Length: 103
Image 1 (cartoon, rainbow, N blue to C red):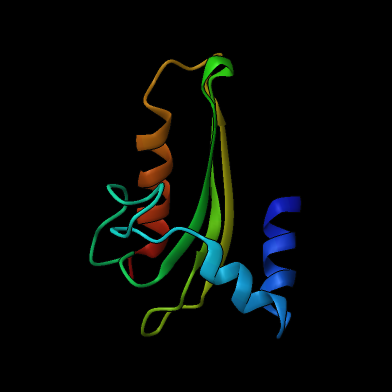
Image 2: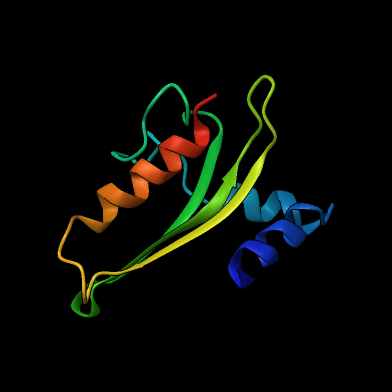
């Protein structure tokens, strides 16, 4: 919740908000999301920061999802501790974000 709150507050900051937004990765562009979340629902709308502590099994994605027609914009932070769960954490995170992005 703290990460999402920070992103939300920064998004409203007229000076720092655009700088933060531009520093985050976008699907299909060079960077940590170049091969993730490249769908019609997220492309051009999603900006996010990935995070991984692979040896600990912790994976994260936090960012913003710009509004689509008839939808509100979203700020989100998803953290998965895979120590007790052996599934594909990145796929789970991507599925959640994709679900949030669909109309």
